[in-house]
Amino acid sequence: MTITHIVVLALLQGITEFLPVSSSAHLIFPSQILGWPDQGLAFDVAVHIGTLLAVIFYYMSDLVQITTHTIESVIKRRQTPLSRLGWYIIIATIPAGLAGLLLEGYVSTVARSIHVIAYTTIGFGVLLGIASYINRKINWRTIINIEGQRADSLRQLTLQQAVIIGFAQALALIPGTSRSGITLTAGLFLGLRPEAAARFSFLLAIPIIIASGSLEGYKLITDQTIGANPVEMLIGAVISFVTAIIVINLFMRFISKSGMAVFVVYRILLGCALLYFFPA
Image: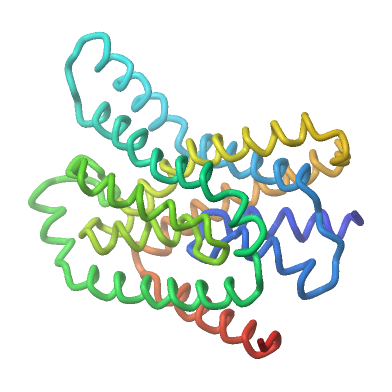
């Protein structure tokens, strides 16, 4: 790949991984639309590692506390709000993990068409808009003042809500759906404050990215026909890492003031453009 290809693809991954616009769809676009050669599995793994490290770095303090409390809940047999959150993350990861194992072959072939991406981009974009509209009717300011919690607090998250969001995450196997988009949509429909829905979405991304990255990494190691350029992988990982940290920070600030409207409009316009330029 040229340096232009590396930079553009790494930026796409870093920008779109945690926005509700589908990173997998955007990584398909260069080869489908611009005629670029497919970047290959090795590069995909590298840029996903970059975004994984970014979300871990951003939430490092939270992750240390959640992990500590979750382990202590097993040893001391006593639950805390943080240990419950840890177990909710584990439980909510299971549906997507099982779906990935069962449907990976189908999704990686049939479902990666431009038209599938276009329809899912539009459909789940509209669904995000509906969820955001309903959610904005809730008087969050009054609720937060009464409970005295941070806007992104997940202390009131229930097991039922976590399971529903976990099943929603399984739909992200379909290119164009967006993992963060569908989990945000589910969280908003369930009445979570946007910042809390986004925080749970990002925390939930960590185990699923580790799982999928490990699977792809295993394929990379065992399949000797897959070429891997260490320099390209390193550059891609670093760019996606830095970009993702910036995007997560800006996104959390943005949704507290502006909501999801811009992402809904973007998804609809993008889906319509794909259907226009690539008619059936």
